[in-house]
Length: 537
Ligand code: NOJ
Image (cartoon, rainbow, N blue to C red; front, side, top):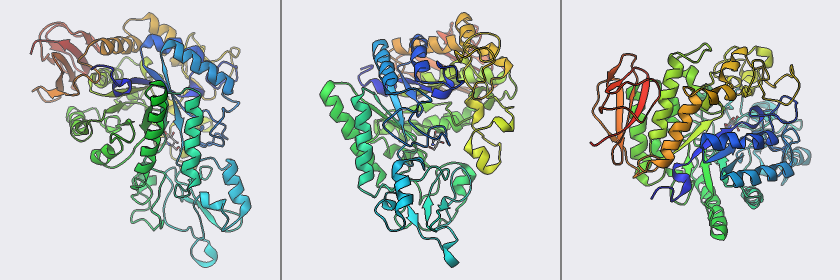
């Protein structure tokens, strides 16, 4: 039955708070800005919002370095403002998910500061991974692991011991085998659940536990090389599943009290779809992002392969698939699919529109990253001196640097700040907005029925009203097509087809589509276009 469990086919909009909307005029987005933008999101038609971390933090990794898990950084507002945001979201029928970061904290977290102060062998240090170094005078790190963001995964303290950090040195990893850590996080969950949140996006959900002996890795550079959690000693340890079972139980406890289902969605990076499926067993996470679609090149066979594997290995277990094409760590689809320069009217934009319709037609849930609904391209020409991504500063590499997808959103007008901030004309946004952002402003997108925004809005409306879409009957049946074209049916008579090539092909069904990502004459499917039809098959 459609919408039985709201989260099974929810469409959630990711708000990167510092880049959404600024209410204070300092050039950085904030919670009051998010609140002001909620009606815009309601109009778009999403079911809920995931807020990137807004907790007190020295912002070495834009809030993924949390110094206090139970408060709001003054940069973004305060708890009273958060409560107002929750109240407005509830009134509008939008769910709110918070981003929780349990693998590591900030080196400014009071428990880490206490650990540094207490010295080797202390109970305070046992909450983290402190160890003696190797070699003469212990001057070599305790093992050969590399951090995901470059450099060794260990940093030496003044007293000679080392501590483990799988990301930056400002993000020490918690020791989840210490009983106070699971207990503390359970309290953090309850703190926010008591304030009314509808669930959590869990950062690095395949992390938390490391191999208990912290042995050397056979391929120590794998994590830094791929920027993915692939070191089998540092990630995906079996004990992590007990944590997700416990968190699920806490959510169920709240549901039993008030009937509102909560949602846990994990950022799960594991090598295979089969391992991924283990995270979404019925008593663990409700969802885990399926990043393989995001990682697939614009190619019909590649898309078909990842969708088929997901259907077999994940949907096959009865859990829900969780699709994502963009987020705050990845190059935006318009650029990734082939349009390095701004403009938005060429191939990359056409393909990004087609990919959106494909994603919204698949069984399961979907996540949209802010600006995706505007067709924003990646800002590829930010000068080095404005880049803030620690990956850039720790590796010196511009490859996959993450600032280009985090540039503040354009809302209106012809010049930066494009209505992003209440600050006076000329106020500097925390990352500079290029002049061409004028073309993508929400005001303009809303007024133009051919815009990305209208495509997303129309897709979301149909998805909400057609029983075949969303969770539907959970199935997808491939249709035979020419090479370079994918077509499938959902339930009773909904057909989605995508032409990955550039030349037109014959549509899989006659008649005018219900919705298409570009001009689509009856009986034809132009290149770089997706369409939905209702048909008697
Ligand atoms: C994944 C987050 O999406 C990313 O932005 C962050 O840098 C790392 N986890 C570390 O918390």
